[in-house]
Length: 118
Image (cartoon, rainbow, N blue to C red; front, side):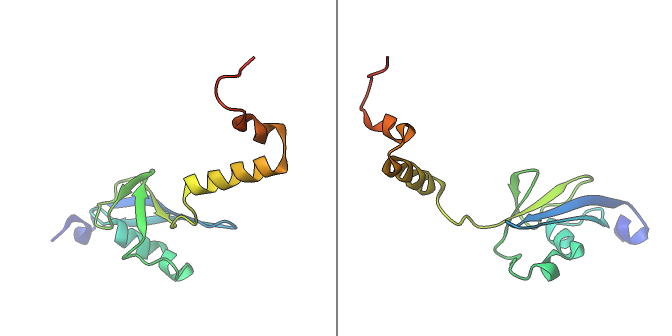
């Protein structure tokens, strides 16, 4: 028998899932030795946000990517990451181009060429 089945240790963790307009933040208590997948199920995230597919969702603990079979430890913050909507480099290029087209001094300073600092 596992220790949890004998009335053994329980582990407290937090499950986080952020959306642009809201955040899902829930404290869970699972058996010692439980995995991230079990914590997600216990938190009710999959019922509250059916768009989260546990098989393909990227998850992490305190910003470090983990797999669903990673064992949860006391105090862990389990984070469920959404897919990127746009490539960050492409988005930055678009912002710079819009600034340049607006004709502001900030947008024009990069177009002067190299090395003409005062």
